[in-house]
Amino acid sequence: MKWNPEPILAIFKMRLKVYSRYPGWIILDIIAPIIFSVIPFLFAVGIAGSLERAAEIFGNYAGTREFLFYIAIGSAVWGFSTGITWDFGMWLYEELETGTLEQILLTPVKVYELLLGAILYTAFISTINFFLSITIIAILFNCLHYVLSINFVLALLVVVLGIIPLMGLALFFGALVLKLKEPWAFFNFLTAFMVFICGVFYPITILPPVARAIAVVIPITIAIADARAIIFHLNFIFNPKIDLILLIVYAFLWPLLGMHMYKRVEKELRQRGEITVF
Amino acid sequence: MKTTEHHAVIIAENLKKIYETKVPIGLFRRKKKRVIALKGVSFSVNEGEIFGLLGPNGAGKTTLIKILTTLLLPDAGRAIVNGFDVVKQPEEVRKSVGVMLMGERALYWKLTGRENLEFFGSLYKVPKDILKKRINEIVEFLGIQEFIDRLVETYSSGQKVLLAFAKALINDASIIFLDEPTVALDPRRAIEVRQKIKKLKEEGKTIFLTTHIMQEADELCDRVAIIDEGRIVAIGTPDELKRTIKGKSAVEVDIVCSNPKTIVEKIQQIDGVHKIAWDVTSSEKGEIVRIRVICDNPREILPPMMEILLNNGVKIHYIKPEEPTLEDVFLYYTGKLLA
Image (cartoon, rainbow over all chains, first blue to last red):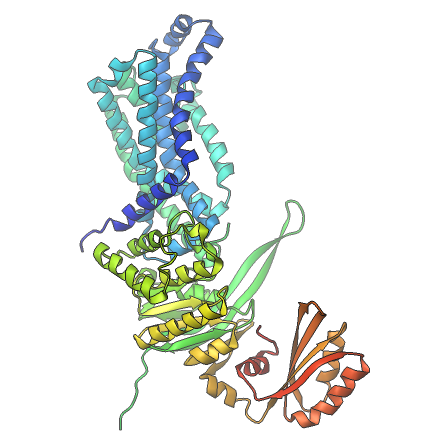
């Protein structure tokens, strides 16, 4: 039978239309990357006294003096990745609260169509934010040569490859949200936890061994570290080959795990009559 | 001899459902509570008929409609919709039914009515050219041209109900579930919607309808099931159901009093009274109590009833013996007034 992407596109278009009817969101999404881009600069000057001194200290443990762009890459990949990870669950909860999830579940739409439709929207918005923040930093701090290099394109490919396992994580999180009905508690806890463990602002080599072991199970860690490794010629998590194999394994493992978890939770909630309870 | 074959498109066999809820009994402690919603419900709906489900709040109507539309899994029993098992083939069931559930939150308020219909039509994978044409047909059929291109957030409650009705028609399903379709509509719109439901039946659609408006059920439904406390207590055509209380009469009493419970208890003691139910409505004059009595013979019960009312200082608006209606059938089987 011919594959019909219409439900996926319909969810994408619907979300985009709703987004466009809240001008405040659009303005915030344009301003936020600018503000976040300037924070590391002020932070470095505030702590080290000057940009030069901050670069010297940072270079000692990270292997590159380009700390502003290093952090910008980490933040941008992290922002893009967490957007994809959380947004599906948050969207499901939003639909649950407004009463439209029940209506969606009455249609023959499949779980993967819901997921892809939701993620297509997030990826679209997050990609704009990603390039906006990277470009602002690159222009402000004279790092445009990094963006225009072939290595930057390779780094982007790693990030794109990381999207597939993230979709599994998104399903996993979506299932948790539907089951426990407390998205904000999860969101706040897991965001803080993942900023700490995924090496957004620093290399994960400075983490204790147990934390490092947990970190490499999360695909975002590999995406961030490898994107930096390619751009700044730094060390990979293991080596390029193993990191790539890990990402490919996660690209199968996480979606399978997420799908299993989601279907189990959905069945349980349909059984208990709680699929539309929030 | 020509025979009419009835082909059942909805079959429910011994459906049971128990909810387990947790009741808070302190800041962190919760107590488990079991609520039996369905106690073995069986019935069937024939192709092309309008089937009405009548029941008071908490009778199991919503649970039943949610099981039949796959939102809820039964604990026991079996339900077949359009030849598909609701548990084993939920996707096939969803493809073949249109559903309008109660509540105006079922729509995207930041989209226009047309955008809502386009979105839900796409989830049913209706091809674009057909979808566009179908939306125009539905809009014309329901007469909602005036507001279809406005954002839903600007709609009145009645307009939202009409859009939800339109949404139930978007996949052109042969079976349509309508949960209280005329609630929140003004009388003129409610009449129009009832006419549209009849028109859908003429087009060959099967309609499964829940309502608490007896006249609506009487006017629209080919057959009616009365559900109470998780059981179907009576089922048949409105005329068949009325015939089950043939030989009995109804008396309606409208009074103003402060102790309706005592009065009802006393009336219930009168010989020849089968069932009695009452409800209270507030008005400018105070609380008005409506009492409905099913009895063998109004002539026999009216004198003692008058005596009770007068001895209790009740202000009587009217006492009216009537022919039994579907509401009396409901009262006879459940001991309750529906609305």
